[in-house]
Length: 303
Ligand code: AMP
Image (cartoon, protein in one colour):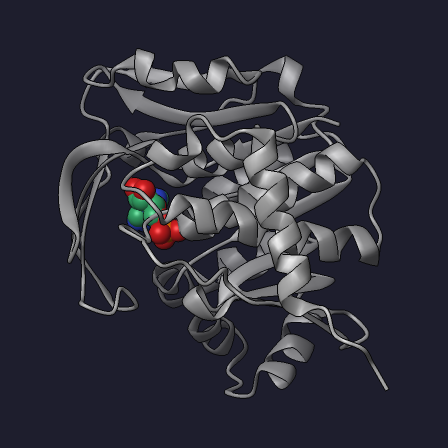
């Protein structure tokens, strides 16, 4: 099944207690594709500047990622900087330079328009809507957003959410969007906005999935002993989630549950190294082994 992502391609400058990188490959669409392309071919939509080294994406091409939707513009690539505190849970954004993203108007190549699975990564809701309007009858649309857009572009966000089935956000964003402190109440409010499935990312505490009938499924985060950089964990999670669903080609609660664990698996690899390093050459065996670890970690006998 065809899977499309629109989002940032970036050069990230990141500092964590375990080291730092400057102008390293990053961006939501890059992390997403790095995880998703283990499961399904990905079509990418985004923009880079003329300072971007195209060879940096060769590993994605080798895994059937279609880059025809990535424009190269005169100017500088989107750059983002972040510094993490000692527990890796708190992050301060040191700079966001939109650069070529500022004037980006996505034009979806004709070959992309029948994409069945669509991930609208964290960008302005007007851009997300613009992309979605160019896709003919997608089967499943998932969206990520952040406080910045909930604060500054709420009506555009509410508009695009009407056409979205899966919302992937963190708990403070769910609270902010719904105006409800309690997550169950937040989910009920969000379901009235359009989405039918809510995924609440909780960083090192895993991810909670809430179905429209307000039943739950939860996956913990994998307890890693060595981790270096949480940047991109959320996008790698989304990549695993959507990549698995596109591969399965069928949408039902059991597939959503497995997708949540595949997402958690890919996020756990992401944080082991800076940038996308750990996601470049995983083996199928490594992915399956960790997925099965999640199963072992959460099995118990019910009453
Ligand atoms: P995450 O850790 O999941 O929040 O994703 C971090 C990635 O998102 C980094 O690689 C950044 O380049 C990218 N990013 C950060 N801020 C923005 C933004 N405002 N718009 C688009 N992408 C962003």
